[in-house]
Length: 134
Length: 111
Image (cartoon, rainbow over all chains, first blue to last red):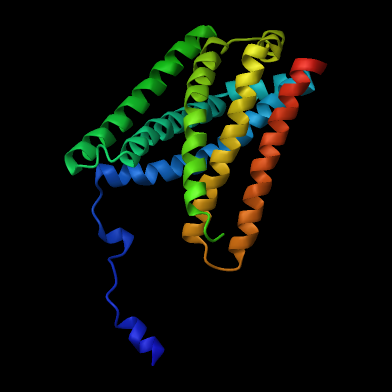
């Protein structure tokens, strides 16, 4: 029976069986931030469309973006963008056969998490100061 | 789509390389324009020095995200829904790009 033969095959452990590693987290976050940036692209297009539509539309979108939820969303999108960009650099290195040793990959994964979060914090500190405080 | 793996791989890398410097430029610019009024924002975006790289970012970004989400759909969706989602993915990328490009054009020439 085809069904019996199928169930006799060895199965790889389910996703939940594996313990978390930083390289695994970086891989999952690369995909998750990529999906999040899909929504970020719609936000960018909406912001540009509002600017092109006139002062009232621009004020409406600006007020949403300047609200606590808006600032939080912008912080999230900025981090997602920086993480995806920096982790993308790891992918470029791997394409060239570099940085694939487990120890190196673990180090660069930590580096990308720490650097993307730090840079996002710096960007918001400077940005909020540029507009004269939150 | 069979036999397209290599060209998809290459286009995804090329669009990433194009997006990389444009994203860095855009993030830095946004920080410096954080407190801008409507008039200041329009004058910034209508300048060719901003409009052209922003247009390039939109085009390269739309290509990159269309392939990225296509790969996610192909990995997880194996039913008949796959074709529908892949079509919607195209539609979304094209709509985002068309809206952004029209707005950039409007700001540069009609604003």
